[in-house]
Length: 437
Image (cartoon, rainbow, N blue to C red):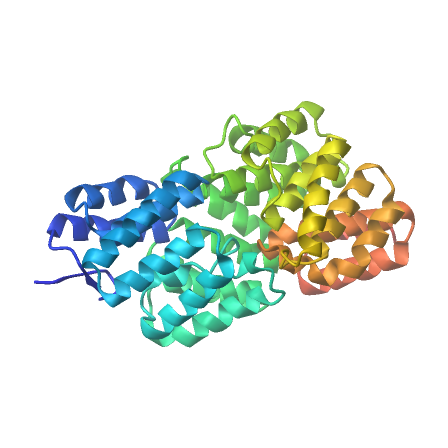
């Protein structure tokens, strides 16, 4: 009997053990769960020529910025697929390999073509989805809507699938349909609670509708089932730290940082190590709480090793937070020079918003709040181009509001705060509103 994946697509392996381990490994990957790499390694051990197992393993290497290993496994997967893969498997391998190699436009084109032919290939469909997916990091301004529309196109092929509902619901939430998004995401979560992406997507919906207490409870009740090595373990606690800041509880946020987010404590992928740490410390400081300088310096030392050169705009913006907070003007100038060069050469799809944010953050750290606000004002509508989630990008809007308040532009600050409170309740925004009434 021919082997299939969980979505009914044929697998070109004759090994029952390889097919079974691959199915389990893919489910673990789609759930952001621990044991993914080990399970995929079992599939490879059972069938050394199984292309799909190699490319899935390559993707896990890529998550953890193990570029050489990821590219080696991708090359091996291509070789295996050319020898013994179906047309679908060859296309699957090639699409993932392009993404692993950072060839974004080509991988997006390949992904769209592949999904047209094989809409139930969930691993390929996962590439453009989420806050760190191909769409989010493409530089497009409407990546939230694009994710939702892609999910709408293939929804009929997935029905009540736990993974698909999770990602579809999150795409709805991020594109502004929070009520429906939360409901769909929770449906997926109920079908498989051992799914970190589902817990995470529900937390995003709760962030957007102001359900801070419910989010806090969700983390406390759900997290004990999820190992510290889980790809989203630290990031889920980052969400809880944001909730603590809503209450003005800096001590709790700093404790979460010390327990799971600081470089010496975290097991997260490099991009999360840098972005979760920098954004939480920056928020604490911008909201008026004291942040020990050593926390910034320690985290910055690690960040410089993980992202020594300019590349991904989302990472560059967070590296600018470090440079600004540690007053490392030299590091920021060097990074900005590369960003500006890429912009001039037409190689920065996210556009002028990237250098503008970096300059504004430096001005904020220098306490030149008027210059910060002046630099950010024209590009606020373009911040979405750097990727990430709405919750992550809100840091830029927060910085802008604080800069307006501190530079004395209270009418504009009030207008922004009022607009946010109209969208969702926020204890922090209420405190800011009262302070400048």
